Length: 111
Length: 114
Image (cartoon, each protein chain N blue to C red):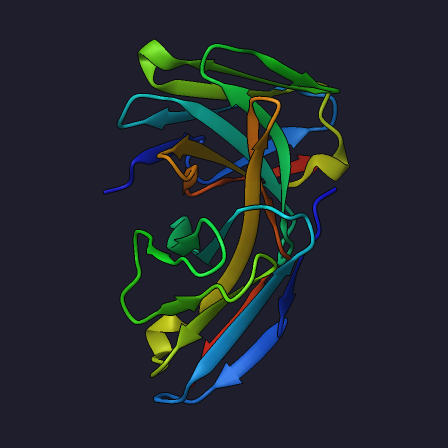
């Protein structure tokens, strides 16, 4: 079964300016995780990389991880229309740093 | 920014035909990966490589082969393409720098098998 579960599970609609929190839960111990952004039909763009013990910040984005709870979060503040797209989390593991992805959350920010 | 390119960007193949997807990275990364992306599944790892001459099976390797002839190039080979292999394929490269490990992705190849 799916080792990485994302929530909201499929899609999220926000009004411009609202905040959002996306979460990932893992079936095994969390090592590090990486959050990606993808436009429809586009390549994945790395947003934040977060070791399990650290909070990472990048502009309006903040990621945090709770390894003891096997959970990580991506917080988007003051959402903008250009934030619309799909957000994927991925758990990093193994000696060759393989990624295990969640199914993604499609975010739509409306004016 | 890491540079990963893929070719072709779009491909239509017939069932039973051979398909080769190519990936090139100019970042001198040791590790390279092939994923496929399907609705409801996110990205799933097919094959990966930790250096020239090496290939390893990922989570869904059946029906696929891989080749890493050089540090820069990593190919995914479908010897006998099937309609179930219709998908978007992404290549990535990655390495560790300063305690941080990140993967950088190519633009994707949309493959349709008829």
